[in-house]
Length: 204
Image 1 (cartoon, rainbow, N blue to C red):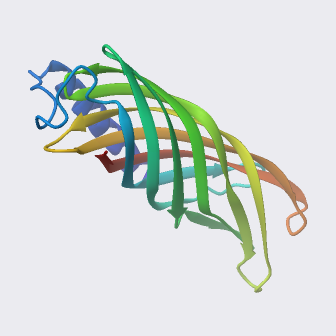
Image 2 (cartoon, one colour; image 1 turned 180 degrees about the horizontal axis):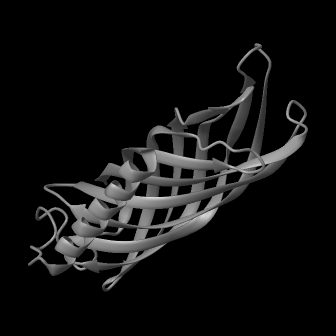
């Protein structure tokens, strides 16, 4: 059921992207944002989405709602936009099998972005570093163990300029956190996650 919901969300994301690409796009935002480089500058925002994960060396798939904050900066050269972004996410994704529950309570990324702007719509790809915590907890006892590790993250997205300095976006992100040895299970575990999230940015 969870995989079906996530697949439907991805299909909706693809449909939005296709509609935006086919639409007659108006010039970007208000006069304050109009000009040769409307996407350039710093921004901050919030996001909310759904996380579907897979724990290595253990049959669990932590899933749940994830949300957080992001901040970044863009440089624009004609239609091409390049930038850097960092984000921090909190997640309730977890799953239980036999005596252990695995969860990914938080993670963050530091990524580069590159895209193409079509007036007030920007399509982009993103790639960079990831870090976060994988936690296991006993279902029959109170014992738990957590490890923070690094990895990588990459994905694609689209962002649409709204009125004034606001923009909205939809993004798919894949996050891979490397394995760490867990004494409780006697094995090494990492987590891979697919994240579909929607967000709002304010540009300065």
